[in-house]
Amino acid sequence: MIVRVLYISYDGMTDPLGQSQVLPYLCGLSKMGFEFDLISFEKPDKFSLHQSLIEKICNEHNITWHPIKYTKKPPILSTIYDLFKMNNMANKLYQQKKFEAVHCRSYIPAIVGRQLKLKYQLPFIFDMRGFWVDERVEGKIWNLKSPAFEFIYQYFKKLEKKLFSSADYIISLTNAAIPTINKIRGGTQHNISVIPCCVDDHHFDYTEISHVNTIDLKTELGFKNDDFILTYLGSFSTWYMPDKMLDFFKVLQSKKVNAKFLFITQENPKAIQDLANSKNINLSDLIFKSANRAELPTLLSISDATVYFITPSFSKIASSPTKKAELLCMGIPTVCNDGVGDTSKIMEENNSGYVCKNFNTDEYNSAIDFLINSLNNVNEKSRLRSIGQKEFSLKSGIEKYYLAYQKLLNLK
Image 1: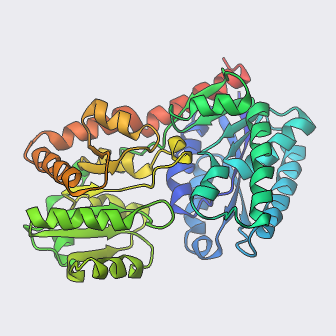
Image 2: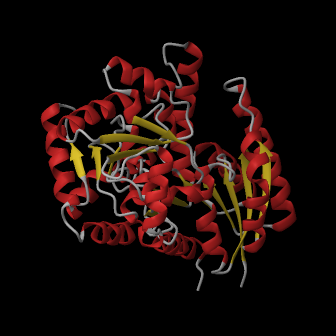
Image 3: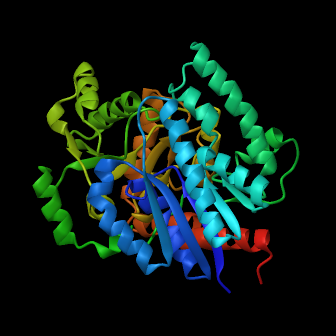
């Protein structure tokens, strides 16, 4: 029996996030009897680069892709326009295919999903991905000193309650967010699953990368063979704390004079370089490298350790950093901070990383001692990878989505 599902994402499939946190799940579920129509919003530059790749993946997995051009400007009006296009496409597709369910990734798609439910009695899955409304404020995207943004915030907080209350099934990234979800909807929600950001552990596997390739890459990037390479992976704007991470690096250099800081990012390095200058960090000790998803495992394989600090806030209790899963499966010891989703609980229970409770020299020294001890353990890489597979494997994520669909649709 084929089950037809409409999947709506405001993130693009040609973006790294779509390729790591949408398509792998849909590809896995398509092998289990699901047929997807996928609506996504694509940024023109990325679409021109990766369109053929995404089309190939979709065609091979019975996914019908409906890309729509993402509108960036002007603020607010652009999102309203995209919402209009999203709603039109979703209604048109429903008339053609009469889906069994609509799966909505985050709040903007959920607005359309709720309308489809009210109009067609279509079961609606709210895959929330975080407390989006409060993220806009805490991430300084919506300034509540502006009457316009204050109005928008209040409007979406009321809408948020309707989305949670009307959803037939809710997917949360973290257990930490469940009490707040229940509070927003006004009661305990039985149809709810926790599915963190998972990782394709066959792709992120250090055992598949040859030592020769690692040495060659180090040389290409200008590293010496005995350099201690600290790595940061991903964007560093909005939620991340490059200022604190550079402070950590300075303390690391006081203990390991051969330490270098590798930033694997697609962002402009100038902001980091300016910060480093203000802290008297030698810019030659900072290396910046852009990479696509296919290149990431080899790049990460040259790392001795990684660090990421995320601004802790109310909305971050619902966050599950994708990099956490990728780094674990690559067997790399990690330093991070407290107050982000289930991260502290998972790391402390598994002794799989150091969680900084404070941002100060004493805490950084303790974290560095942890890293050095980890690197002295010859079995640590394989142990960390095993934890990553247990907690965040793509296979387990697909199975959890299947169980959610099964429960919602009464599948045999």
